[in-house]
Image (cartoon, rainbow, N blue to C red; front, top):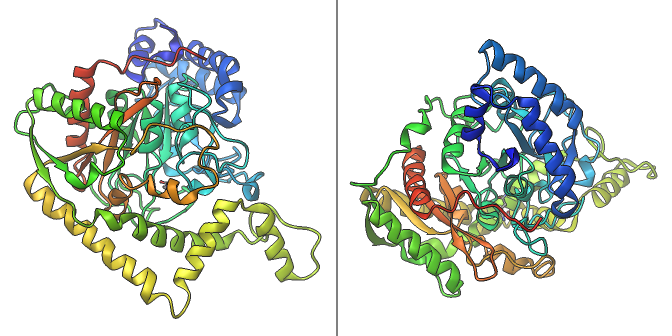
Length: 486
Ligand code: GLN
């Protein structure tokens, strides 16, 4: 298999015993990008020269034995994480030329571990969306069939991993943005517990929901990436001062003693039959691995879309107030009055979906409406969190689909935002409650599009997610499959 198609753990071994060099691996990934990027469009910013320089440094470290856990591994990073000296656009015109003066903590950690940063990958503008079509620089495509969406908002992350345009990636998840594209692109994506991974240097969308996490080719790589990025950070006031475990210890054979809850509300009417069939097959395999299953109920699931689409836009409207044409990014130079400059800069800089969220959020927070919308939504958020607390008294993890349907065709739902919002129903509760969730591939639709299975767990129980995902992956034996149409 070509180097770009390998996993972190496979390459680590080859790099350690001198079978390949970091420069060779990086060159192979860059050649792959050269070959397929025209079709996939995963990257917003690429810096091959810088990547090769980093690879040379990695080779030196490998030689003298000072290389970290990702030494010489080419990675991509969602364009919402600040990178020192490298443009960070958030998929938006308003930040088209924004070059941060510092690295996000997660980027610092990647670099300290010796990773080779290939570039910044595509996303829905400010991470608002489920398809990546709201990227101001054009949408990334699904590597399994480039006529289809790759999911969002971390679409470029998922597509770049699936297409072999990097070995692993970092994405962010506010309501499903790691898990959904992972599911649509046939890769593994983990949204960690809120507070497990630092948000410092992550450009804020909805601060009480945002979380950074890995997208990888298999569960072992996911654990490896979690080892690198997790842990307390004094620069993030919501970071939890708790030691992170070695997540690879969770990757053991067998699930004896594990109790899996199947939330009945997650097998909703309108669930695509192929999604249902593949997820049920996955559940059978988890049982074969020794887990016990039990039907459970999360009775407030029905409200999660409404609650999320009040809280997330409310926080966004406040977070995005900083883009005023004064401090960052695009400024309209034609207006004479300050207020016109604000209005024109924001009108030109933001896309339609972002404007829609700012309008909804501003309305929900305005005086006279606050109690009816934001406060009420926050109260129901507590009920959703309580649902989980009760269920996790009875079981270790919850298993369900990630997306109600496989990927759809590009542009198919572009004029129907409501139906796209509704497709978030299976992922957003985890963000509202702050719990971890993973998407792991569990099969393919008749059209050959990947389908993911979601495992959620209680706060800081990522190891249980990884353990269940690992056992499913072992039994399914599909994680080595790569799209062969590019
Ligand atoms: N699809 C959701 C939204 O549009 C979630 C996005 C995300 O997780 N960043 O807000």
